[in-house]
Image 1 (cartoon, rainbow, N blue to C red):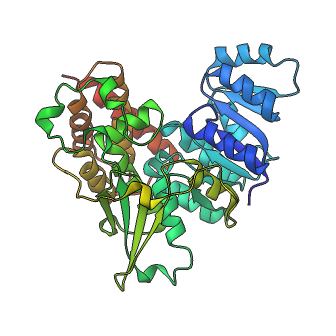
Image 2: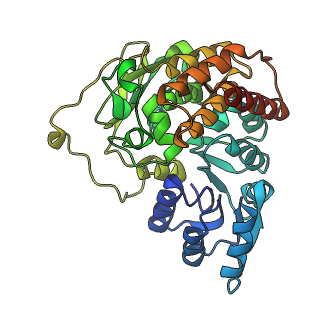
Length: 382
């Protein structure tokens, strides 16, 4: 169980909820990082009194240093500063809630420093799955999932006899704000419409990923690495209420599910207190209040990002990294109003189709793939 905690990405949705859990459970905060939201970060510094803090944006880091000069906190800057926080000696657990590919290198640094990893940054395993899992094995480090779906699978697998008995894992998906719509209806979708998630409060990038259902494709890839299953053993079912967070099916066709109200503090707390369970700030689930729970198949034709990701992880190597980076760039372009909603999936598909990747790779190969995918997307805007 965690005692001394570092949070990478502390000013985002997951980071602030993790601090809520830390506040309730009494964890000591040793290091925090953020991209540029120094107003929020200053408040966190004054409440939780971390020993070191990193801000990616250099100018914001300089500003923060002046703001908190009356404290003893050490302020670092840039990606190097984030990596220093990730490997900071006085923490035993690192919760990585950085958004996107930027989370990969800090995860590797934390693993090399033999920190327990509470992983909310799915791109870490999507882009660098073999690097991360091999590094964790080498350093005898546990990777505990924070995503609600992967936490649910992790919880359902407790006490399983062996992986041989596992028939499949079943990821649930809310279906996002456009469930039931066909491609023709999504041509003129605005950013504002795509940001209206029915159940979860998340950052902009992840919310758009939910609208395209790319997030479910990324979670499929992450599940392959986290649970040592093949892509064909990962199923997806749309569950609009977001009460059943995911399920596992065993060889005897018995299915075990994890349920709870849609609140990220449950999986965050479980990752930080594992294997113990503590009283939670989250309200109890009342199935009677919900009345009924619904399930349906995904519309793979309309939301093609899922199958793009399934194909990428089946091919293996750097293909998942390529799909992830293409999506990050296309997602950003959509939020900037430079492309349409349907262009996101088109650009990801075209980028992956154009790519030729090796099975074995290094961190530098991942970074080169990231650059290739982003440049391809930028050069193929219609």
